[in-house]
Image 1 (cartoon, helix red, strand yellow):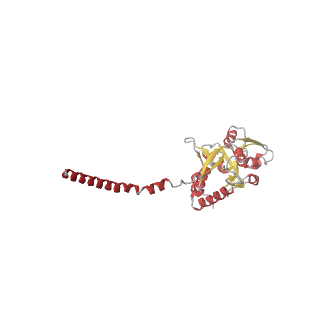
Image 2 (cartoon, one colour):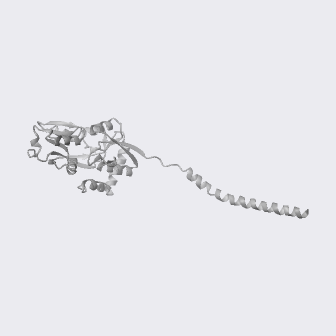
Image 3 (cartoon, helix red, strand yellow):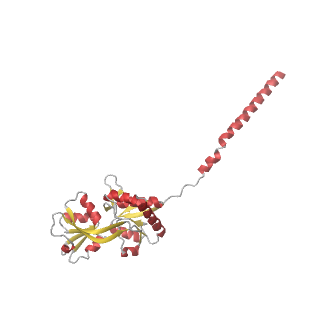
Length: 273
């Protein structure tokens, strides 16, 4: 009987030792729990502010839709993405006609616009512009076999195709004795020229040059008009904080060489300093 009691006592002692060991071992994983909980409770990074930016995406090489991918590409598209990255924004591009772009910004339907838009006193009354990011002039383009129009002086009495709402349209309407035909996109204006229903197209020189370069050798530029225009990114009048961040980002991109990189990609050279 004593022997049985002794064996029972040994068993109880062994069981107690196992419980003690298990209890000690079970505490080790718990030591990491506070760190895990801290990671779980770590506040998420605040979402980036999204800017809805309007653009006339039929104005190559500044903004147009890639036929293969359906994505909006071009100098302006690359630039606004780079600006957004530096400034800490997200960007959503909203495509519309150029005349609609101006109204959308002015009526606050969108936050801003990048659309090869010339900074003018009239437009500056409606919204704020960023620092200028591109220099451009107007141009006169005719069919390649037209030798009668060589300059602005030869446009009197001629039909001129333009894109509605542009500074090219404004300039053409000031030329005496011309009939100006407005179109929703610059491609339609060029089509009017190529079909023989217009004598010339007045439009931003870099856009016309790109159009000719991309397989339209039946059109030529006869004059680059030195209008000395500058493009800016337009914003609502009350978006002053955004405007400051965008201007700072543009400055950074010009200083770190990214602006020149984007420029060279689309125009084959770097801008004149």
